[in-house]
Length: 393
Image (cartoon, rainbow, N blue to C red; front, side):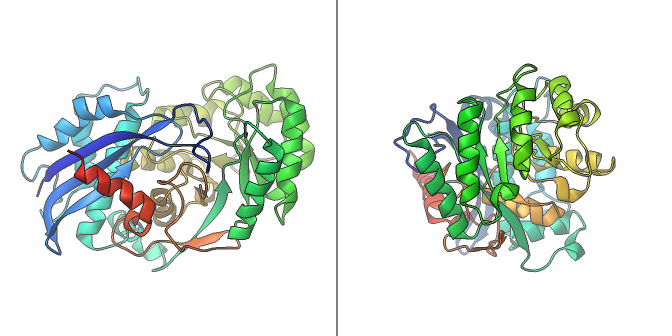
């Protein structure tokens, strides 16, 4: 049992459904991990990518993490029975020689490969990832055979032209697809324009502003955050996300102390050490606020799960966790770990994000893919990306 081949490349990924709109040169890494296990006459291959919002990590993957996996001795990445990959052993192999701290974005490189390894292991087991993961964690009795996961429609980036009209159309399409809740961006155009965006978006949701979250993408600081929070408070929003620099716990705690609604944080924190700091110094309220750690950006599942364990042991309910990412991997993680729900990107970050082809959202809930693994094969455009990766010269 070993990994026979790993392919990786970077690719552009846009924040907009219309890919002609400039998106800042954003990229992600896509990876294919091929094992020596054969199913239906073909070697089992797992697929993964570096989630969204950071950049591709080709150099780190090719120089450090891929060679460590490929150079592992036969059986060194296998489970105790020797019949499948052990994603935890693979993770330990990738992290061999890495020093604590200095997380940078090496976590994304590890996380992209980790996603592909979990996909391969679940395929070898013949199970959807959520069932395979729950079985590994002893949580199988807590999940249904076909669970539904709560999701919200994410997007709402500022359009360079006709912003309010195009934003309104995007939110209307969210509602038509069955999303009961949605999230848009604020913080880059001034409070007056942000207020107009919120009002326009809220009009498109049956639940109004109470079903709308806003993401400031860490735009504010100690001077600008309080007036922004004062503008937002009367709307009664679903949550207010990423207020300031992710490590500016003093500013965040000051806003939280005076903001009556839920606050969301954690998307741009990548380690258990940073999660501890957020818990101790970020001012968050476990009975009200939201945690958005990204399972891929937190060094993959072996890095993400200790964060969940640490925070739930200190009073945070599992329902507080709404992982960032907007893709199929997070749906499985939410179902297996019993978390609150997941972001879904039906229009942005295509073709890798979003649900499987033909999936339905009903009153804000969706079914999980039932194919072995993550289910990228059921999302034709995403699968096309991975298939093209396998045929690269």
